[in-house]
Amino acid sequence: MPEALLPPLLEAVLGVGTDLELRTTLQHIVDAAAELTGARYAALGTADPGQDGLSEIRTPGTVPSATACLTVPIHVQDEEFGRLHLAGKDRFTAEDEQLLHVLAVQAGIAIGNARLYEAARQRERWIEGAAAVTTALLGEGPAADALTTVAERARLLADACAGVILHPTEEGGMEIVTASTHDDPGDIVGTTIAPGSPVLEQLLGGEPVFVDDSATDPRMTTHVRHRFGPSMMLPLQADGRLIGTLALPRRRGDRPYTSVERLLAVQFASQAALALVLADAQHSRELLAVFEDRDRIARDLHDLVVQRLFATGMMLESAQRRTEEDEVHETLGRAVDELQSTVQEVRTTIFALQQPPADAPTTFRGKVLRETAGAAALLGFAPSTRFTGAVESRVPEATAGLLTALRRALATASRRPGVGRIEVTVDATATLPDGREGVRLTVHDDGAADEGTADGAGTGTTVTWQAPL
Image (cartoon, rainbow, N blue to C red; front, side, top):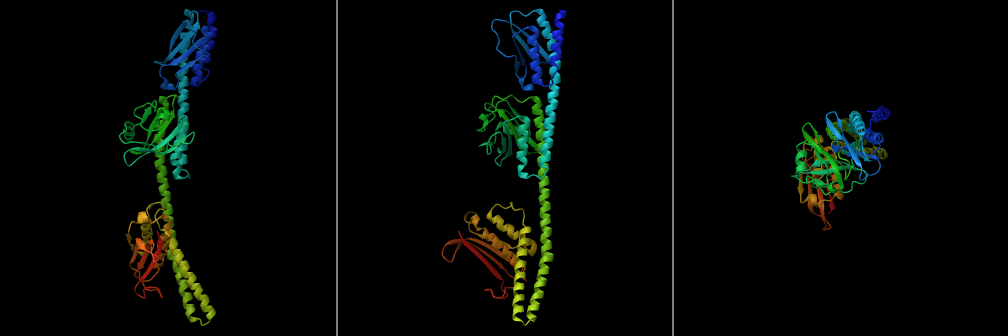
């Protein structure tokens, strides 16, 4: 090799290794090859675009026609990374080819270093992202935001156009329940994958699915598939249990996912699934602590506050019987009435505190049974409950007053002496006095009747509430 060529070659060799970013390194190689040989056009085509997400790097301009060409392979270790093509020169000399081979060797070393740097940088980003998700899920944020947090963070890490969470359906398919996109997710949420899909079989088996083009892949069957290109579908699996799927599609025409990105995304999904399980367990423990605290408060109210109010009421009644002053007698009577009213309100609060989670029953029948179950904790026995007619379809949500009346009736019965049985009846076929169809609530207990009731002493007490349908 002529000595005159050594300084430019040395400068070019040093230049290709000055940057650790892969795309910039490849551009340095292309530019150096053109400058060293005097070619007006240079391009570097990669052998496996999916490896690094790059297909071709070139100098500005187009390939000149009717000119000589020179091609040299570039190897990274024992693997062919791609080929360096030169054109736009009347004739390439043996020195040109020798220079290009030397440059190709140095380029292979620089590309290997850039790959390692890029992989380390991506791994750091994904690890930090997984840690951020875990911190967010185990923090004090609402549990309902957990899936959105995973979808949003994964979308940003993968440079995807959407982050989607799917849950298994009762029919054996999967449904999109959460979507994070650049724009409004629109009709993405609610999209289902029908049972029997090849993609679904892999996901339910805990295997990730990688798709080159969602719009043309025959395995993809959803109506939104035409919007997307490369995609990853990753099982959210913890302790052998599939809790969902994380899908990360890119737009049509976007670069494919590299093998490093696929590996890191699978690891992220595994970590996210564990964080979701831990967050759910933490939420359950927090709810349990709240319910235990509510139960303790209810016991304290019953054992301390109510008993003291009863004792105070009895003292006032005793003082009322002994006084002969009408004004004092009337004042004491009002005080006794206020205490009885307070006791009833406290008992109503006790029942409310002892209810199961507010979102447990979703049907009207379930809400009624929840009230009677809560009363059983104080009564020492469960009231019998009977429903007549199609209460679920006939009783509207607007009749919430029925539940309030039921709660108060149970609270009143619980403080009446001698109560050993309570019968609750909800009749959705009742006819009101004015002839209209209605719903009627009847609460009967076998305790000592209040003075002045229609049932008379010793026959129990019946409370009735009704409303039109």
